Image (cartoon, rainbow, N blue to C red):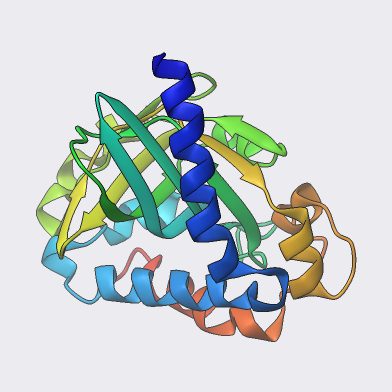
Length: 228
């Protein structure tokens, strides 16, 4: 019964999210992700520590993830993932992703949550580059630290493959994400890049970033320098 309820809830959520990001509007995901990231980093004492971001291999941002749950928790959202360019100089273009299922902290009732994840090592980055990656099952995921005061504790967090955060109703915090699956969205990528490209090609930096990603890559560059 619970599995049937999960499937019904997921289909309903996909129905509400899908039309908002049809193929012709795929670039809206990039702009939404840029807004979420800039808003979070605008308050350094409550944002992601810059020195941790400087060490991240990849970043995934899912704005306005839909959630519904009472007994059965369901999530569905669309967003983007970016990785470091080969050699570590700058960031790749964004690959569009879908995030489905699993749980984000304790859920009762419905709502929307912005989710940000940092992949902290090469092993995690290789998993993210697959067309499908289940958080928790395939990679150690833990709640990330928040604010400048957390920077002294970074060594402990570097042991995790993925550090996760959420923002809901203005509150930003590190939070556990378990069992959610990240999938590449090839049709949206084709719309953004103007041709068929793979998730892996984008995240390996083999495809030039589109003009629509300039704001997001600039924001990541500005906030991932150790000296800040």
